[in-house]
Length: 190
View 1 (cartoon, rainbow, N blue to C red):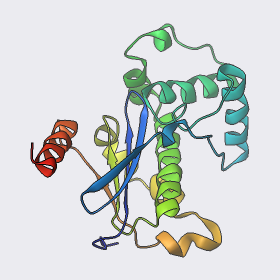
View 2: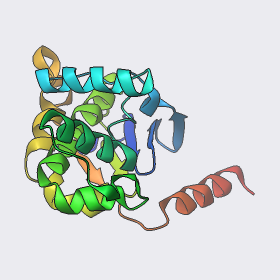
View 3: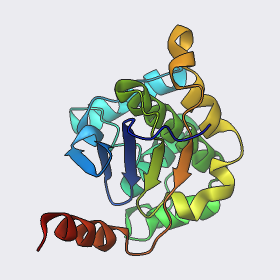
View 4: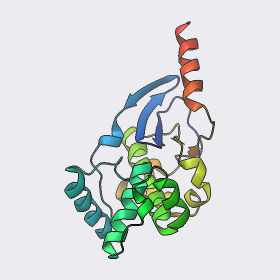
């Protein structure tokens, strides 16, 4: 796809949580889309939604698309397979351990990331592109490129054509938040 100037763009940032924003031109509208209800796209994901509801009282996108969300996906899978969670599952480095030791969970995470990125692209007709920010996407580029992300991003039924040409970019600048803050200060003339 190619970027359509002056068209809306979408930003999703999975890291310690899931941030979502949309913008047009130099105007960015932050949001709390990560706290929106998770929408399952398969029987396994329906079971995941029930598992999240039982555990948290809600099933949100942030519950699956964040570092803690990656651990949730692994815990759900371990429980479905009747496996005992490893002792490190409670530790701070658990998301990195899951990413390193559970390739099927990481692939599922990429699919879910694609599904929600496609949802946001569809909500705003993001001809300006979709940008994946946050700490997770740059660390899993090969998994994001393996096909599951793209398939779920584009899999939107009869309205799939609306986002067929929307490009997706991974923002890998180590201080992206500071760059954005500086740009906003310049914009305000501060």
